[in-house]
Image (cartoon, rainbow, N blue to C red; front, side, top):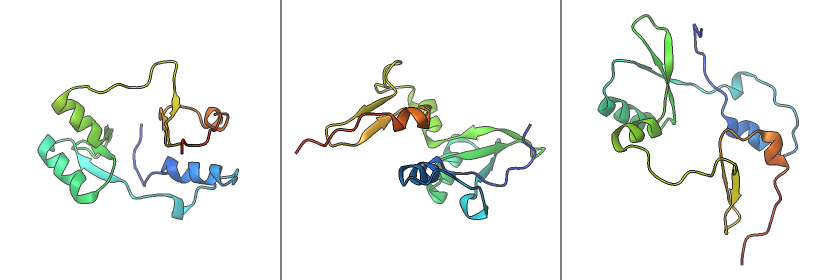
Length: 124
């Protein structure tokens, strides 16, 4: 059980260090970001407004006893309101390089697998 949330480490920070060949990532106060903590009593509308006001991409949900009961993202709100839609990557395809050279990558893909992805030049 998580008793006290002090913040979070953004995977983008870790990825940037790895891409810059900085093999070690040391956790320190400057790498820990403040987390949005919300009560589990908020309505969807209130939650949406809180995300808009703070521009955060996820929040930790706590109950009336200040215990962590989960996390929520703006995407979770959209799925709740609109249902699932769109075409996710196929189960066997965790990464796809687009024509412009950018990548569409499943967030669960291990970093070691990402490092082994073949690179191609964007179409001119």
